[in-house]
Picture 1 (cartoon, rainbow, N blue to C red):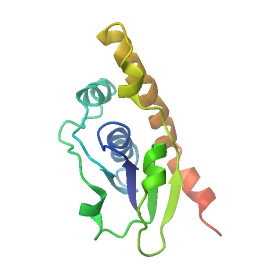
Picture 2 (cartoon, rainbow, N blue to C red; picture 1 turned 180 degrees about the vertical axis):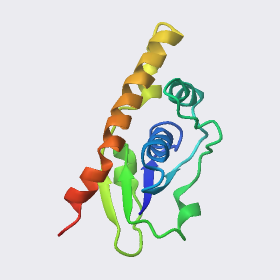
Picture 3 (tube, one colour; picture 1 turned 135 degrees about the horizontal axis):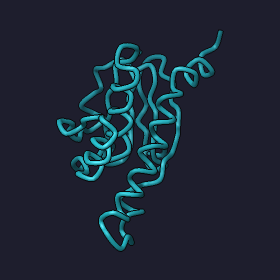
Picture 4 (cartoon, one colour; picture 1 turned 135 degrees about the vertical axis):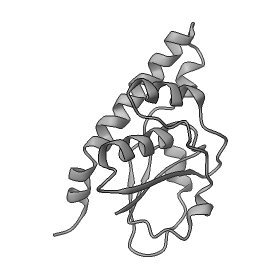
Length: 144
């Protein structure tokens, strides 16, 4: 199954989701991430994923249009603005929205780097839990 994780900047949440999906379900799914307005991978996202043993340091931000030729069966929007701006995909595509808070936005008011990273870690773990449950979520979405 081809899965796309979509967010606005393809900088943090969708990158984490792609990393977790490859790590947890790499043999079951083919996964990508993209954004509707990509602007580079967030170094803090790379750092907290590395802490969990998942290397996304080679990931790069991609615009969703660069993946138009891939026949996605599932598109997961991981932020509200991407859900609103989600393009139409050809074929039989299930679009699922699971919004996560934006770590960079949450970290803006942090008093220290450690405090900022705590926001990233919390969202990272929420994304991990969602991605871990993805096979069951897909079964629920698929008519029998």
